[in-house]
Image 1 (cartoon, one colour):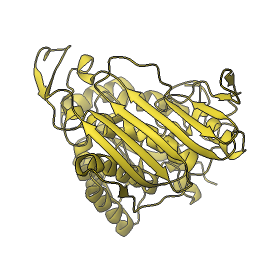
Image 2 (cartoon, one colour):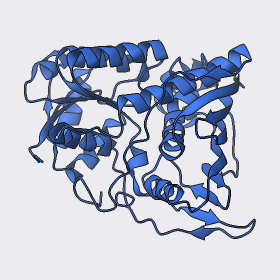
Image 3 (cartoon, rainbow, N blue to C red):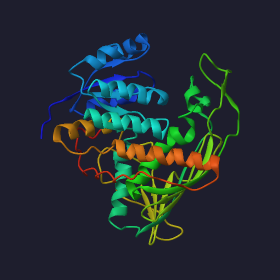
Image 4 (cartoon, rainbow, N blue to C red):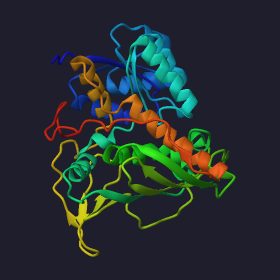
Length: 368
């Protein structure tokens, strides 16, 4: 096994890039060298903050020291930028979702296969202690055979806090494509692939008004469903009810619960790396389980890239891989299409559950 660092270049210097760059020092395999953005000023500001080199996109893609391009652009740019990186012979790890459509995602995967490079995608939160502990309990038979589950992500709209929320309400946005990848990736990691789905979609408002920043008061048109319910039938036989919404002021549902033949499991927020894992064998008492895995005590939002880098050096599959992300993308598209067409849709793709994470820290320090 080689621990020789892997050069990483970031394209897209928006809000989320800071989380990746703050987590990067925890993983010695990664050498984040440079960043680029359509806005040179944004790239220069990020480079100055984190000690990087600001480059143009063309310069970054031509840099032979860059092996992985971390694509942190908006969803509509994930595939166009990814295709540029692949053409340059780079491995790619993108923010979620993998693409804004199955057809576009397939183009990306086909190009990577032809070029002989790897594709990874967020989310990587399922590699953290909370989700890994929950999966380990299922795999150990602690709740018996999983038969059902629920997944709820219901919030008011992002325009309440985000100064430029437009892309959340465009195609490829909305609660399903924005937050659905966290929930669906966690569910697939625990239960395996989805076989068929049924969905219902709606939008409470035709426009949203920005509440903060220089554009406060400006209206943003809504071009995507903002309340989606789905029934997910997994190949394993489990059936999960899912609700993703930007239309709900408040609720009291747990993020994810899995119901087995002998017990129920409460899974922490899949948008975090840690959280409390609870098991109940009756209708009243929930007991906390020891979170035995690493990477639950901070925001490790680059661990999927670190796993990809180690996988490249070790010639093994990486966990936050293209097949998993593509399957999640197909499920999301199918749920939305089912809502529009009023029918159950079969899911064509299948993916393997990623290998579990080691209990001990595998890629570096265990504190962010």
